[in-house]
Length: 80
Image (cartoon, rainbow, N blue to C red):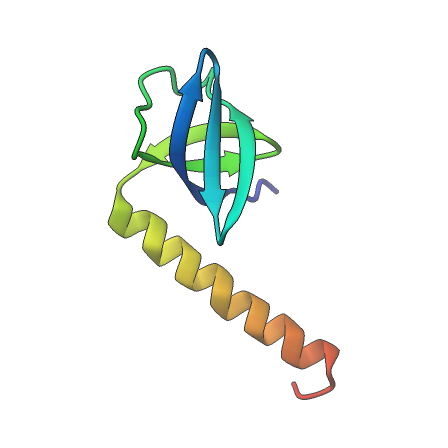
């Protein structure tokens, strides 16, 4: 199973992009999406941007991740 998270591209240097997700800045490879531009949103898996998504899709994916984290946190605390 492949899990990817949406991140916003802040800066590009060669084949590496600086991305942001929830205030966390990470450097990821953009070799699979060479057409990416600063300001784009990419799906990141294992340190590699695997696709470009629009802002609405990125926000929808982030909301799903937030909901999943809430469920997992509740389960860990014995509330679910």
